[in-house]
Amino acid sequence: MLNDRIIDSIGNTPLIHLALNKHSKANGFAKLEMMNPFGMKDRVAKRTILRAKESGVLKDGMPIVESSSGTLALGVTLVGTYLGHEVHIVTDPRIDLLTLTKLQALGAHVHIVEHMSKGGWQSARLEYLFQFLKENPDAFWLRQYENPENPASYIELAQELITDLERVDVLVGAVGSGGSLGGTARELKKYFPNLKVLAVDAVGSAIFNQEDYPKRLQGGLGNSLIPSNVDFEVIDEVHWLNDSEAFGWTLELARNEKLFTGNSSGSVYAVMRWLGDQLPNGTNVVGIFPDRGDRYIQTLFNGDYREKQGLVPVDVSAKPIKVQYRTHVKSWSYSTLEKDQVLSGVYQEEGCEFGE
Image: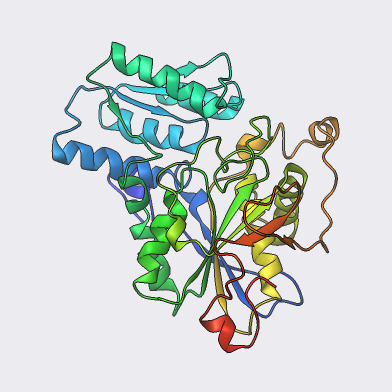
């Protein structure tokens, strides 16, 4: 497919049928957002920046700034510098060398905060960003955690799924800023009102009322804050995986499905594989796979690193434990967002409680 501009290559990512496991009755599909130029959040950068330019909020020559330690930084730099803007990325020491190298090669100005604040790295980055805005009042800030253009960026993703599949019964996605899962789910529910939405988070993330642990090793999902773009109304269930589980299932995903991804995708895969033999025959389960594994070669995919961090091999026969919402969790657990409520729709019709 010929595109006149690199930013026109964002979107229309592949959808593939996963094998899951030999006991699977449901159909598993992976939406490979990792096949965007730099990852899923290229969509957010493209829509947000173009809309800001169309509305006149972002004028020619104005700088762009955003807080990110991962794929959004790359997307903002791709789109912003391509359109002639100076791009400033505020990040922290957790940024991997590959991402940092890409940002610098694309022309971003990278600002690395030195110390974690009481609210974690995200809070420290935002404090730095606020100071940057004071010194550069004409700068355009994307505000990924609260800008409605973030979830709106995924309307096209949902439309791509509608084109490719007769129906979507279950949507599984990792949550960081909240935009991808909420935006995709909102649009899909217009066509599939019985859609069930499962959020995947990290143990030690504060998003779903857990105690924040800023030193967690997982990247790409979780948060020390509760972003306003997290759409709790459309989420039926949340799963938490710890670092060992997330890393282990990412390795399993590479071995079993030949997909080299980040740990967000690995955690989504774990939930999808478990769902495969929990749900009725023919149920269509779609997982959103955000980014490639390249930036994790020195951590997740490095055996010495995993051993040093005390990460244990994943038990592929393990099943999540159901807990009441707000229960403190340390390993793969899940909870409905409305306690003790049996979800309706396709699962109830088959006589089984979803998530059991």
